[in-house]
Length: 230
Image 1 (cartoon, rainbow, N blue to C red):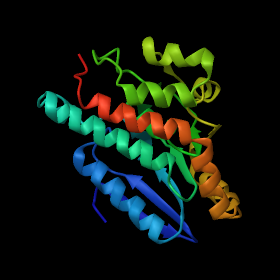
Image 2 (tube, rainbow, N blue to C red):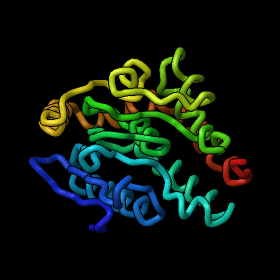
Image 3 (cartoon, rainbow, N blue to C red):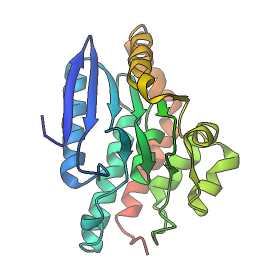
């Protein structure tokens, strides 16, 4: 497996750990590695737990790529949106164990999962695109609208409000907040519960529940490729 994503199979649970420097920046190589890891997890018929390093899930897209030129930025965001769409339609349960900060695309990883657990502490979770001068892309708007609470959706997207883990739970970014030492045990316990699901029913129900969102994302990804983020 690519060194950017460590893959470990533990009792039918595929643990994917992001490992790309201090902020776990999501570069083209990292997105490729995540797709390869999801391929392997699907082959292993495993429940997925995606996590980061202590203190950091991901700070978002690799800024070196985003600043390299408009086309590079468009292509990276499109590939990231396609990854989120894939996560939403993954045929087995997908859990994110948020090990710290989750900013921009890091927060969208949370919004694309079936269950999200965050570690408590002085961490920031949210969508800072507007803060850094990026008009929010259509795919991001669609995903945030679907997964965030109505009261927090516009605050998060339009105002780039950042949330601590407890507030992020209320907003809809995460489902549960736990202490650092119980993050992975809790994620594995949730994965164990999800292993009891009928996977065919889980897959089919997931696709029915998310049918409108998946169709909207398909259209949004194409729209985003035609526009800049200025």
